[in-house]
Amino acid sequence: MNFSSRLLEDAVAEFSKLPGVGQKTALRLVLHLLNQQSEDVEKFSQAITRLRNEIKYCKVCHNISDLHICEICSAVKRDKSIICVVEDTRDVMAIENTNQYTGMYHVLGGLISPIDGVGPSDLNIESLVDRVKSGETGEIILALSATMEGDTTIFYLYKKLKEFNLPITTIARGIAFGGELEYVDEITLGRSIATRIPYENSLVK
Image 1 (cartoon, rainbow, N blue to C red):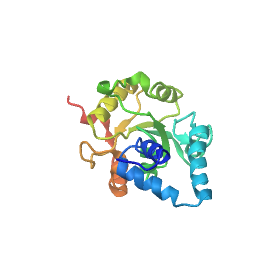
Image 2 (image 1 turned 90 degrees about the vertical axis):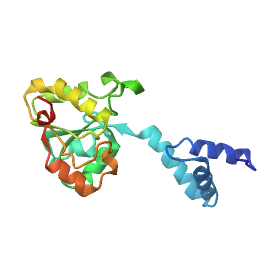
Image 3 (image 1 turned 60 degrees about the horizontal axis):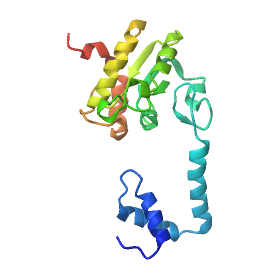
Image 4 (image 1 turned 30 degrees about the vertical axis):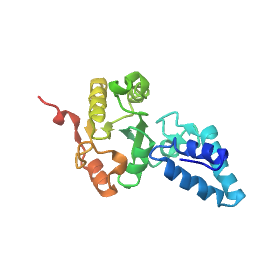
């Protein structure tokens, strides 16, 4: 792609680094910004800079937050005896949009994937174990994507947590294998949470 400006080329190159954004889409976005008022572009730039510099991760559940303890963990009306384990913040948002879950969350920050060099020590697993050790947890819901990496992570967590003798459940598989939680419609995801099943029932005896 030939550019008439080095500044334009550099901006397109940066936008192209975003997931799912090719050069043509990046060029369209950059040209759109050029057509906006300077004040609007400045607000856009400041929002991104503030996001990168000021965002926090909840000390309890590791969800993205403006505060050291996120609004979900600090909410009085949430059921603190249930912890729903998810891959990342997108899954928290997807489940919250169902309006059918009122418990707590624990964000792993990824899934176990040896082929990608991601092992258990790279995820927020030990802090989950510490939360369970506190004795306040009555159920763990493993709400991970129906993929090979998701199933591997679920199995690892089950082996890690089963010694605590508390219910460990998984969301019902109204979700096709290979499906990512964030792309599942809200009704299906809500029903999958509501009709969760004991994980041990899915194991081959």
